[in-house]
Amino acid sequence: MAVAETIAAPVAGMRSDLMRQRVRSAWIFLAPMLAVLALVAGWPLVRSIYFSFTDASLSNISAAQWIGFENYFSATTLKSGKVIYDGLLVDPIWWRAVWNTVKFTIVSVTLETIFGTIVALVLNAEFRGRGIVRAAILVPWAIPTVVSAKMWSWMLNDQFGIINDALMHLGIISSKIAWTANPDTAMFAVLLVDIWKTTPFMALLILAGLQMVPGDIYEAAKIDGVHPVKVFFKVTLPLIRPALMVAVIFRMLDALRIFDLIYVLTPNNSQTKTMSVYARENLFDFDKFAYGSAAATFLFLILAVITVVYIVVGRVNFDGGR
Image 1 (tube, one colour):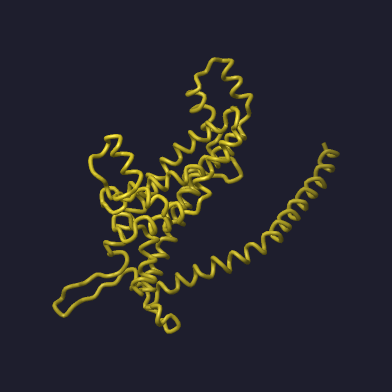
Image 2: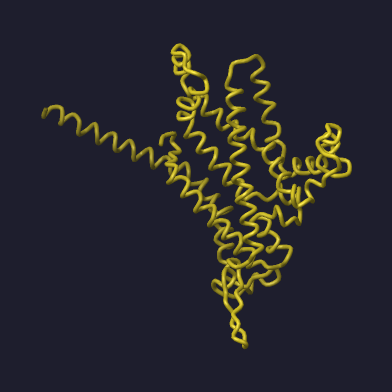
């Protein structure tokens, strides 16, 4: 026993030293990336947060004065005794943008996860030409978002778009629809384009998780006569859960800050205006730089809170565990 303890102590010390060396080496390699990230992301973020507490505009950024939380919430008492509330937290247009963003995120991420899982299961199967299909399925995701939005805006055009023409020939609609201009269909059009474009991304991440599932499990289930649907819910889904959780959080963060697709496909449409579009309008179009910075800061806080809650509640372990 004493001999074993004598041998174990130096071994444990060597492992501890090796671990410290690995950690130190990791920080050395990460330092350049962290420095660049702090420069291109951290500093602009800090400046945006600072400007949200000032009266800055595009013409007086250098002379901006500190006004505290007035861009977020303020109360002014008139001579008549009436109190007027102002600021981002009581702005109905802002809360409409928040609702649009949340609705878009929930619907798009849910459908993209379902369709992405189906596509990943198909791509994971053995069939001739699988490599070509895997490459082809990524084409919508590889196309720049602005290009995709412009392409679909022509396809959804109410006068000469191919979507209206096809639906009328099939007898589904009786008259042409302005998909991106109609308040009732604008959000549907945006969701259609986003799901078409981003489902391959979800499929790619989920496929990576499927590739890690041992094939012996499926062979054993097949021998035991287990139904494929039951195998999916009892075996496949639990095993790919870490990859699925990571895919969902990545896509959720991307959807919550959606800008380019909305801005190109449905400009100046209150039914699809998101938090990012609202912030951009105030920053540059309305010359309310401080107010736009407050909106951008609030968007960042929402993203941060959702990420933390999602990781804690979902127990996401980015090393692959739970």
